[in-house]
Length: 356
Ligand code: SF4
Ligand code: SF4
Image (cartoon, rainbow, N blue to C red; front, side, top):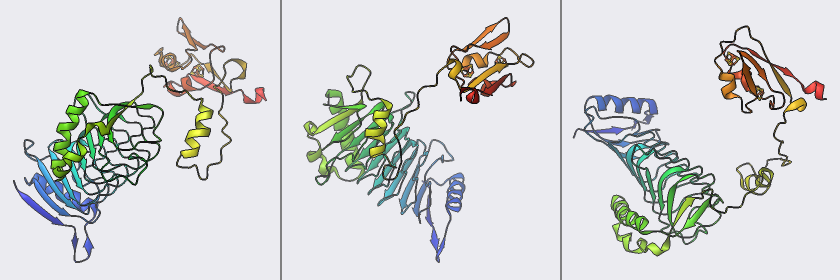
């Protein structure tokens, strides 16, 4: 294992992110696999590099990194951060093992698609959002010893997250507020108080498979962060719950869009303090005479590719012996036919003045 140390601050001159990443890439090409880096906030350290000999692993020991530690990092990379790390740790992690021996800023594990991320402290807002799982590869895992900030696990589509709720007595929820909004896949194991999570998920008890997974995974996690002494206090699995998305068979309360905007989105949304909104929801555009735009077809350049037919959301376009027309009873005047036609056969005329 060839080791290379990098000081990114020399005589008050700071190495830029670009210089650092280029230096790492050059040293990897020379066969170095083991890096110790004293960073000064440089971004993206540890991401998207392969060892010259692909059978070898790359190892990074980092201090004081900037955003996106291990962004898009690959299988065969392991990263250890001594102390805390700012936002986007493991962004789109693609297989690396990333250990942060401290807290993480916002959006840790954001979009993570593979590998394992272990955090020995807390993680910030929107952590775990958009995690995903391609079944061709192993599921990504995201382990947090303490708690997450609000809005975490938004739009989670797959993967496994574990929030151990250690040292969280002062918090009313170990997932903050409004977490799991739009979650459609994956699983979150949580120990501790949960409140104010999205209506699209449900909280259920663990089954035997869950307990087996947690039992072995917890030991590995605590070992990685050098806190095996916490195993006894964290391994009472009656203290744990599982959060999974509701399915269409779950009897979830449905809201209208305007009700959602008024009661949920704007009230708790990120612009809620200053947004001005009359909560009006525009009706679905109507077909017929009232539509704003009317498409008309010109045969001259038409190559009969049928792309317009295939893209019309209303199935309004009819073709008969290579003559195309839009059925006004179905057409809503959206203009998609014109936008997708490479031969510019569709002209959209404005009908609004007529309506006025
Ligand atoms: S997309 Fe354009 S070229 Fe293709 S069939 Fe429709 S009108 Fe003709
Ligand atoms: S304007 Fe929209 S609805 Fe009407 S024919 Fe074109 S694609 Fe279909």
